[in-house]
Image 1 (cartoon, rainbow, N blue to C red):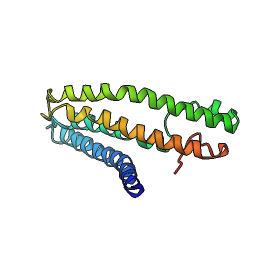
Image 2: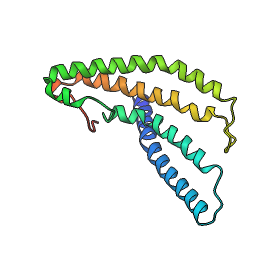
Image 3: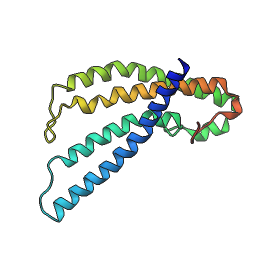
Image 4: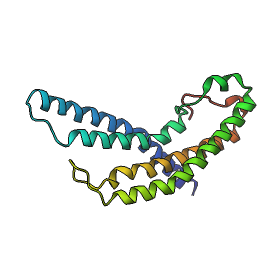
Length: 169
């Protein structure tokens, strides 16, 4: 059973690491293609800006878990650096509980919102808007799982190992 959870964890980490990289790369290619078509051939594309915008939404929300796992989210680091290690550890655990609580409350609303958007069609691509907004609850689930894992790591680790920002694996 532990191997199953490890496999799921590795898969989720791969998705929230690789997907945003591929998404940003594709957005760059699509927008570059749009610029070439618009200014060199005078035939702008009707779908490129909309697709890039929707890809940006996916990249942002799928990347939430990555940001939590690597402590790259916005924090008040100046104050944390002044605190003793044990207080900093307790503060980070409290912040994780607060983050978990807030996003747990947002999750059902994001699911309802995404479901409601499946009846609306995007103007240029002609796809249901739900395919765009479903990235919000998926990203929140990734974030919640990463917050749980980070909180467990914080509780199990000595206070001196408490990371303020940067990569931690």
